[in-house]
Length: 482
Image (cartoon, rainbow, N blue to C red; front, side, top):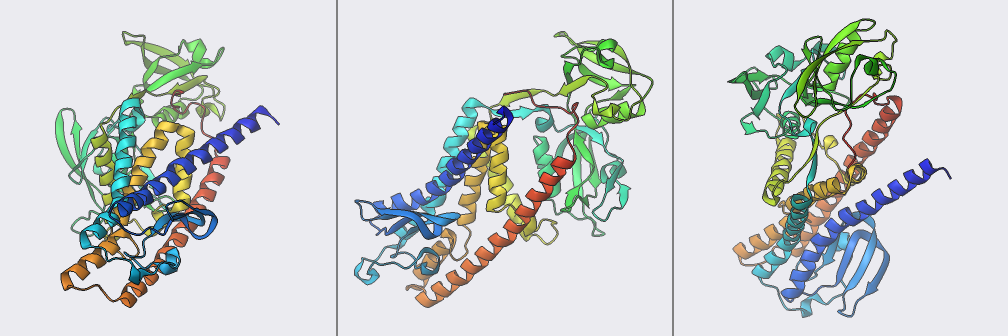
């Protein structure tokens, strides 16, 4: 077995372990909340299951509770026959419910909300760890400065149109402060606000209102996003602005002969500011077989120097291989407070939910990640490092908490709604009505999961094929090793 294959196997095994530990752990924490509070409030607990359906294995504890790991990994449950009859989903209870004492409204509400509360507590604990150890961030992710404005966009039907950013007058160097009135703190905020946006102009066009700083002035620009890419996401045609730092110079290359050294920060090529690797490649492509003047910043003092570089005329010059420069960008660990982290994830979750129900939004269920998509993101996060796994797990737990509190049958929020209606009307809702509502919603939820998972798998297969078809350029910025 080659060392490369062994490394790949070990890497995948580590990723799978992290997925099981943190994704499975998030589900476990949710159910543990129900379990512990139910026991504390004197509620009969019959079963504690991770997953649904038939058991892979099970055992009965000394406390009389059946513990099991089940085949369908779509969540988990704690079987509480005094509180809810979820037989079609959780399996029939063997307890004599009539012989068990009734449970008060307060106890019901505490047990139902406990799962979400434990997810938030778990997310907060992980956020404290991230706060202490730091969260990886590159200059590309933390910036709000525009580094590139593309002139055109290609729509899903293949037509090429002027980019909304160029039409609106956005410029390289503009600092984005807000979109549709919402403050932005990093490039991720900008992507989310554009992609999940639902703004419209008076004539019905998609619209995003940018508040920017330009040369000491604050400007407001109305930009009209277009649906771009195979999945039709809102885009305007901008890329982040960040520094391009020479990570390595190939000996005897054109760059080495020109006098580039590791650590140089490339400021411009032929007078064009290079705040993005896309601009860098464009300038190289325009300058084949001739000398180009590069302005660089060198040394700790940051002295500016001019370097004259002759670009080879060969077709693959823009890959960087013939030039001899490997680039990276700035990297650091940031330490956002736990409250800031949770606030960001709550905001992200609510924006996503609102975009799903807003008729002016372009976000549909096909663009939402299900279990397959979540596992895929966990796998990618694991490849990026344990810190990114922690960050994504925080988001997952906030999502689990909010989703389970939605007032829909079968979810905790639905059970709380049924209990509250029963409290207000002085008697519980008819059992047949509750069972019918929960069974119907259970089928709908399972159908939704299958639907979303179909798109997850399709995206995964398509993206893998795209990755194999196009290897990234060697000069593209790469985050320094952690």
